[in-house]
Every structure is written in C-alpha cells, then in structure tokens.
Amino acid sequence: MRRLFIVGVVALLATVGCNRRRSHDDDNPGSSATPDTTRPTVISTSPVAGDLDVAVNRKVVAYFSEAILDSTISASSFTVTGPGTTPVSGTLIYDATNNAAIFKPTISLLFSTLFTATISTAVQDLAGNAMAAAYVWTFTTGVSSDSTPPSVISTIPMAGATGVPINSRVTAAFDEPMDSSTFTTTTFTFTLQTGSTPVSGTVVCPSPGTSASFIPDSDLAPGTTYTATVTTGVRDLAGNAMLFDYVWSFTTGTTASVPQQSANLGSAEGFAVLAGTTIANTGPTAIYGDVGLSPGSAIVGFPPGVVYGTTYGPGTTSDTAKLDLTTAYVELAGRSTGVISCPSNLGGLTLAPGLYKSSSPVIISGTGPLGILTLDAQGDSTAVWVFQLGSSLITDPATSVVLSGGALAKNIYWQVSSSATLDTTCKFKGNILAEASISMKTGATLDGRALTQSAAVTLESNTITKP
Image 1 (tube, rainbow, N blue to C red):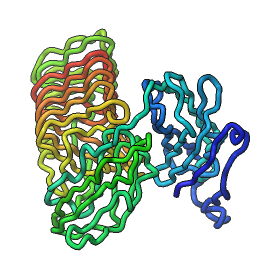
Image 2 (image 1 turned 120 degrees about the vertical axis):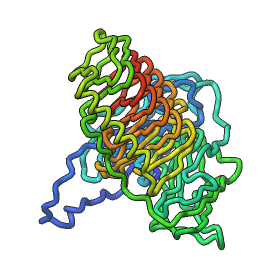
Image 3 (image 1 turned 60 degrees about the horizontal axis):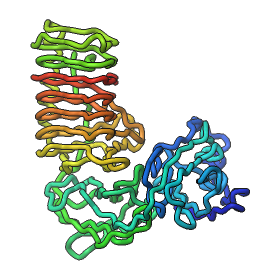
Image 4 (image 1 turned 90 degrees about the horizontal axis):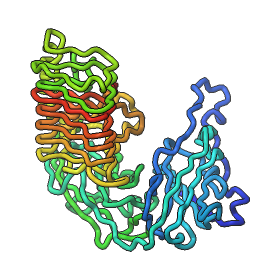
C-alpha cells in the first residue's frame, strides 16, 4: 500500500494522515501475545548521509527497519530544509511494501546547497512504538539534474541459467537507486515462456533500493522455462525510465533449494584469525577472539596490534583447528543441492538465504548504495548463507555487507578457492574460509572470522570481531 501526502510550508504546521490502524490485540482484549516494544529505526537513506554532488531533481528516501504506521509519516515528521532552516515544499509517499518514505520536492532543489533531512520521533510502528530519537542527515546538491536512464546490470537467476531451484525468487540489480514505489507486478512481470501465462507473486524493492525481486506465491513448475521482464514503467529517484524493457529467461530444475545449515568449524570456531604461514600486522589492529598459526611460525605486529583472546603458535591447538578448518572448507565446497548461480559483482544486491555459487572472481564493487550487499534473513535469525567462490573474493574501498531481517554474521560462510582481499574501510560480514591468503587493507573491519588454510593473513589497522 502506498499513501500520498502533500507537503508545503503551510502543511508543515499540520499532520496529514489516515485512520489509525488497530493492533491485533485491539480485536482480542484477552490476548496474551508478547507485546511489541521494539522501536523502529532508519536503516538507510538515499541520498546517503554526507553525499555530495546530488542531482537537484531527485527524491529523498528513508527506509525503516519495520512497517510504519502510515498516518505518522507526514509533513511534520519527515522534513527537508535548505538552505539553512528554509522548508522545502514537496509530496510524501509511504511505500508500505518496502517500508520506505519517499519525499519528492515540488521543484528542483537549489544548486550547490547543503540540505538537511529529518525523521522525527513522531514516526511510529504498527504497535505504536515511536523512534527513540530523531534521525537527521545532510547532503549537498551539485550543479545539474539527473537525466540518465537506469539500467539492469545483473540478475539472479542469470539469463539462460538451467537447473534453477523451483522455489527461487527472481532478482534484478540496477546501476543506481530506484524509486521503490514504481515496482509492481505490472512493471516487473514473470511468466511462463510458453503461452505467457503470468505467475502470481509479490514484487519488492527493499533497502537500499538498488535491486528488486519477484517472489512467486508458490513453487515453480520443474523443468520449465520462465521469462522475467522489468518494464520501462520502473523509475529511478529522478523519475527517469529505462530506455527498453529488460527481458531474460531461465529454466528450472527438478528440486527446491533447501535451507542451509551452519558449518561445523569444530575447534576452529574459537578463532577470529587462523593462518597457514604468517600473520602480519601493521597499526592498531584489534582482534576479538583467538589467533592461531599452523604450520608457520611468524606472528608479527602485536603490538601495536592487540589480541583480546589467546594467541597460539604451531602446536596441538592450532594444528587441530587447522584440520577442522580444512574439514569445514571441504564440506562447504561440496554442497550442491539448490545451488543458485550468482553474478560476479554482488554490489547493490539484496539476497535471501541460500547456497550461491560463482566460478569467476567475485567482487563487491560500487559507490554509495551500489557498494552494499544486503543479506536479508526475512525474520529468521537462524538463516544461513553459503557462497562458493571458484576464484578470489575482492571488495572495493568503502563497500559493505549489511545484514537485515535478523541476519547474523555467524551464519554467513564465504568459501573462497583462492585469496580474499578486503579493501580500505570495507565493512564485511561473515566467516571467510580461504584456500590462500586473506588481506585486509587499512581501516577494513570484519564481523566474522579470517581463516586461511595454506597462506598468510595480512592486517593493517583493522578490527576483527568473532561472532
């Protein structure tokens, strides 16, 4: 559901709303269900905080951690001002499907101007919980409008894929943030290739708005070819449409993907860092968890690095952990049921739990929202992701892996057949099990483990936190 509000200087004095929804317990006074006391939060914005050179004709979006009571999204609870405290006139849409509030200025913003967007504590979730504090961010416009059409840069399943699990969702990634309110089953269609029979389902374009998914209501038919189409009806945040419909097809296999199980790391579970040859650090690295080396002998750079755990050189503890790491690596690499082929660039994608595979080097590349890989557990804190990478893992500077829907870093496994490199200030999540080296550049952080079988772990002023 999407609600439209008109915002102006006068309208800033009043709240525009609709009838307040009643909670489930309103209809069941005697209900003993545990009340929802979790406050909503803003999980991402577009433009992002501190963004520069923002197009003057684009919308301003805030994504929330949960469904919001639409009557609390109003001219007074979501404001944009600039320059200074001058109110910006515009319209507000609340996209309930994607928990997104979208502000569209009435006229183009001023050039080269600092603007401030504010979500106030008047915003409430469906249980009536208000935000704990106002969310405020700023961005600066450039000197031009955005007239570039968006385009699809990758899909899951990929075009021409075969053996696709019958319970797959269909995802398209874009080269820029999109207007989530323009994605419907009319603008993102999914049909049988033969006869063009439509598949019933739901279309979502979640935070940060750089990918959209068609989620079928039921399993697909086995051994059947389907066609997905993203039409020119979708828009970017400046209102630009794609030049052409984007159409691709794939063929299902005979089985569904199965929920992945956590890997058994054995005695390696207590380690935040485990290497084969050397562990070399420069700068004030902090490691929260044990550090081990086998069969090498060089652990250098501590201090200035600090290990908040136990450091083990070659010996029984490290040797046993290395054997358990190898067992876990082989087991992860051998998983084959319900494999989903993934593109080489994971930046900008939102992925559900599952088993993903790529035979080519995998990167997380891009700036802003395009440099974010979002892993959405869909409310299941036990959900597991396994990435089988036939070559290397490389991230660009300042990219990140973001967890949503209850996802936990301990349930993410990166089985890397070669080396892994996390570039400067990258914020990474999950357990990296690499055949060769793991390198973290200056300021990169890892909420997970850096475990390599045969080579070195190289650190530069990093933080590693064992989940």
